[in-house]
Length: 205
Image (cartoon, rainbow, N blue to C red; front, side, top):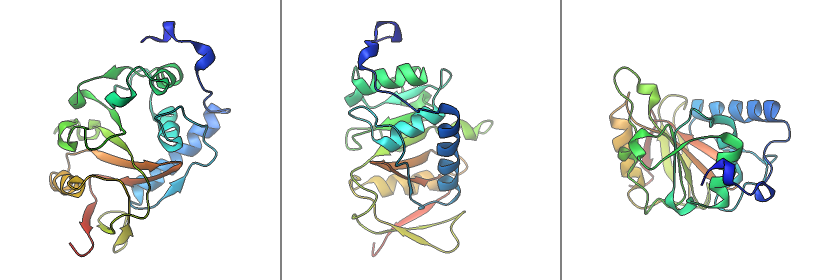
């Protein structure tokens, strides 16, 4: 699918004020990365097409551009969500997880392991993939205790809808710092960040 062949009448709108709104979203994302476990809400973000949450859409509109290689969950292939991202962000897509600057995952069970994405290298550790994981909710799941930079002592989160081995993947990811991916958990219009520096332990585990 190319932008040239898109039916523009079916493309949902993006930010009404792209400069101000993208700046506001960028500040919130950076604040969440600096303070892991903090939940922010993008309640004024535009409604994204089916398959994308409002938070995932807001992050994409803010951080994706024509130079940003994106891995998109196969479940979104040839969908309105893919068309929306191509049109508004101009981002090229890749099927190679290891090449992606960003990834949008809608089905963690079928998605590649976090280790399959770009982990960065000694020269450019910051060029690792930022993985955006869409889940059922940021609350109501098993309680997980976070610690590390940006957290005064510890903080608890309880995301819902993650596969059983997810926190093992996070442990492996954190252990190889300075390499590893950064994770953004999104549900509806909410987001919290799990940077590669963050340690996570299931409470009681």
